[in-house]
Image (cartoon, rainbow, N blue to C red; front, side, top):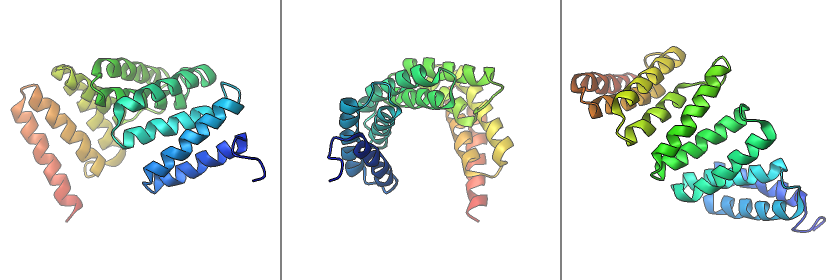
Length: 212
């Protein structure tokens, strides 16, 4: 009532409330507010204002949570373009946006495009002394490669993901089990049945230890 529905401060508040709704799995309500915030932001804020990027990013994430990956791609691409321009190509938020776009592309059936983005993000993190680098960077790239039938290369990246996960969380961890399962799937697809069986059994053993 004080500012009116088209004031930028209203858009800021809508983004914040949408974030709460997202945490509560109220995706319809969250998307409605984020759409309103984006419309107000585009109409009343400078084109490069970070709040516009926030609204776009939230919408892209909501689409992915609802498995609308094709719908998430154009929003994720605009987020990446904005962050690259305003923050720089090596900024952590830019690299997260790049990985998010790659995830949407991969699940939208565009694995080759996802691979290119994931390789670039991985190379930038390596060049920055591994800053922000974790197992999912390797695991996601392994998945993108596997979707294209590049199974031998996928195994190598999946192995590295398992190594990192074990170093960070130990042998008995849910995340280690997830990485191991991805490795086993890659090994099986690459024709290494014995290795795959060993790692599937390791996943089962971790599950038994965690739920004992």
